[in-house]
Image: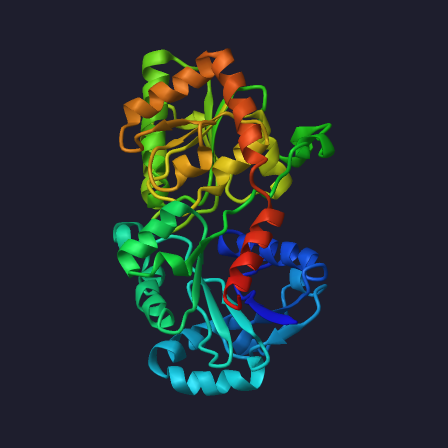
Length: 387
């Protein structure tokens, strides 16, 4: 029986980004492992602070699974060992993971286990293509990935766009790269199952006012400043009645975004709501007049798919993977042109037929993606190594 061990270290109590992907992939793979005759194990490393405290517990979301393996080193030290002492680290790992046929590294890093085949996730290459959009932590990815690629047998990425970047910038043979698209955290009919009889019971927000919605971490790559400029144009020239709602945690270099908000004559109509639970994010998606996602670069662009799943018309960038995800179910614009962005928004909120068309196309498009399909494609990638 094929024995696969997947690195679940990115999974946290409130998964987002890579942790969200890993948590959903593990859940879907476990649903497949019995019928497809493979054994799935989970390896986990503590964060540095937990390691110092002697806290080696797994996140609650992982404790229901079997075949859990603790590697009692903080991930930060593993990164250092991979770069400086890979052979010694390889010998250390033998005592913990020598039984695995395949090791799947899920966060730009894979263990150098000499008895296992190695699979490495690379989601996007922001840190190489757009270094101005990243912080010092992410800048270290390039050196680490290049080291890991020395022993990696297969790369998994999340879009054809990212695959092309990996081939071009890291010179990986395209035959060694599998694309396994992501899926939404929501499903068709999600809002029918989540009844909010009194929305203000959950959050103090006036849903009677129409609004434009953005959902993601607030950081330079997401291009929120140009969204605010487009909003200002719409307010000034077209007197739209809409509000602008930004949902997402503050990321790297977020202060210019809040400076732009404060500088806007319509700052009282721009609302930042920070982190919200899945149910409330879904509520905001479902009631928005339009979802606007003018990101400069994405490995996939999951919020676009989430908005489509919940019946929200989408306006997004014509760059990187976003056209690949959106297909013909969104309006695509140049993210560097606030005027074009404003015009696209005006089309959607001013044309009920266009809104209906985008909603219908979006729901149809969203059905092409599921975590079951992601797991099936991932399993296909594993099996390609032993074919």
